[in-house]
Image (cartoon, rainbow, N blue to C red; front, top):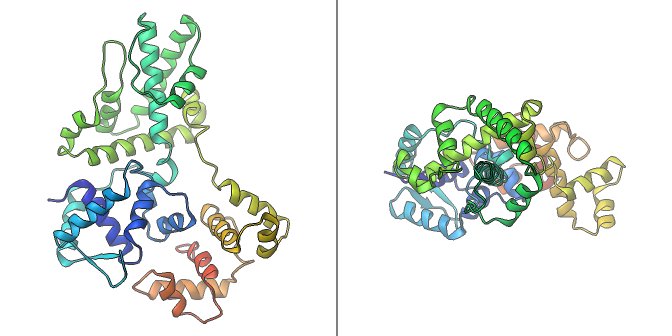
Length: 351
């Protein structure tokens, strides 16, 4: 029987199918903000797992890969540090997916990098409110994260009357949110909250409800948080307190550097001109353009690759068993460069 982390990594090995190294798996789960990782998530349909295990180290992934190889679930390809599934691995993955369907609402692409911080803010705010309303000023805070402490202090009501009003509002908003989740997820959220005369349960204490596997609990808990954040973001007027928890954390759809490139593109500058003006390598500017194409479906790539070439690239990619850019390029006319291929692939599924 696979452990949950083994199942997640085996799934990603299967989706990458020898086209990406184990480092790509690590970068995806950790949430590396690079053009390559962003495009990998889109190209291989695994963005929902982006930044869902930010606490993992590369050595953790390496150990998991080693265990899967020792169990003959994966085999190394001719390329260094890339793997594919064996027949046994395919059976193992089928059993794993059958027993562990991905939690609904999981959206690492949008919320993976901020969910835990939002949770700490909410938890500490509720804990502090509960203890102070009960007259207890000597409680032990559930986190020592100074940035979280600073945020709570900044937003904490100063008077008892305001604290009473805040407690009512937080209760109403949390109740409305939890009512929209599956009952099991709502219970997980509540069971972790601490307050006066109440100590929330830890991950290890709750993991026994999920086969004793903390990684499985972690992902389910993440999905519950992601669902909550999605509801708050979509219904901001209904959750005036909750939206304050996450608004400053929501990353702009485009990175700051890519935004600067975007502004210059709109002014008519070429890639070469932008590169010189910003004193950045041409490849970096091309990465920005690929990011823009991924993040904004209304961003036109016609200026860089025409429709006919785009269709040719997508047709070749669709018929190739491998997703490596080199394999796609080798099957195309020599004048089509990697930048054109990467751009065309951002429109995969839109043709």
